Amino acid sequence: MNFNLKLTSLIGVALLTFFCGAVAAKSPQEASVTNAKTNAKVPFRDIPYLKEAFIDASPEKRKDDIPVGKLGIDGGDKAVIAELAQDIANKKYGFVDSLLIAQKGKLLFESYYLRGRLGLPHGQASTTKSYVSLAIGRAIQLGYLTMADLDKPLVNFLKELDLSKLVKGAETITLHKALSMQSGARISREQIKEFEKNPCQLKGQRQVQTFLEQSPLISSTSQGFKYQSIDPRLVMQVLDAVVPGTAKDFIKNELLDKLGITEYGWEDDVSGLPMGPHSSSMTSRDMLKWGMLVMNKGQWKGEQLISKAYLARATNKIVRLGDDDIFFTGDNVTSPGYGYYFWQADMKAGNKRYFTRSAQGGGGQYIILIDELDLIVVATGHERDDRTMQMAAGGVLPAFVKK
Image 1 (cartoon, rainbow, N blue to C red):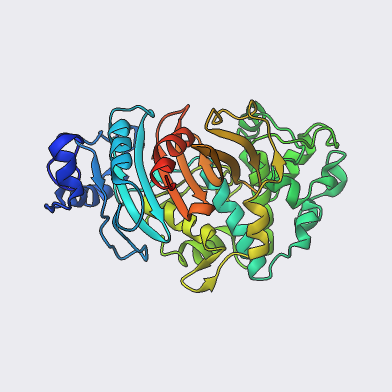
Image 2 (image 1 turned 60 degrees about the vertical axis):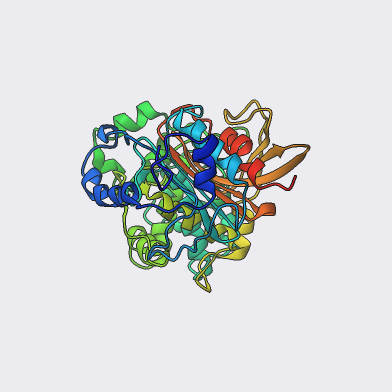
């Protein structure tokens, strides 16, 4: 493990030396940057594990508009985070690739493990859905949609549909319902695979036509919460229909470029639009930018990118879920909920609970906001049944709460 200098232990003299501000060359970090472009050409599963974790409690200022600070001086308990870093390196929380911590607008802790690399985009899985939600918020801010449009039938925005052929109840799907995983449309993975054998029926808005023709009856009973890939595909279609140009150009020009995100990936769906449910990739630092954008109520560098009204609704609890409904709950993570492709939960530290909002991707991609502490936790990993929320609650939160 490398803590910005050659350390082999986090305990005793080595721990004291690190936290007393010893300075050394940042060769592992620079190697991560140098190797990122090479690794980007390699399938993620083939990226070799780092021989030594890289951990920095005084992150370097880079040309990415992310302010930096020093752990312990600008916030946080250094000893608690050092113990957490050792636990991560020992795989206590599974296969974690990176952990970044920011408080009060400053990046205070940056670490990379296993397949994590500074500057290398990491697959985002369902975290992609949260970026799609923010794209809708951007469209509202620019006037291409309104808050009132959220409660209008989704099919009204898609002028190429033959409404007479859609399943009964399709007209009851609103943007609100699709954004909160309550569309009521039901298409199985097996059906989608079968449709993809004839991809012409999924091109453009024909994707929606096919889904809403083949879905079973949509009713108030079916329009309960169901986490699925159809809903963000429907939302991406609406985005493409209402913004100038294409959804892909809009996301790039109005969000990624605005945030200074240049090293990223975003696969196309068979429809020709960007994937709505998954398949983007972002660097850990760029994930932090998305978190800072939400924490700053939609502002970035003084510009209001996301509608405040939309963001307040999207990132807060719309659907209340039971602790047994979601795998990430536990003794210190309870009361889960869902907004517009954002999750909510309470985290416990001592006798107090803290409300959290988060973007989450299967395998360990998380952007967790704890507003009361002005704290952002970013993590990536490749652990299917990840323990990231528990890691944040048990490892990060105690370092930032007042004793």
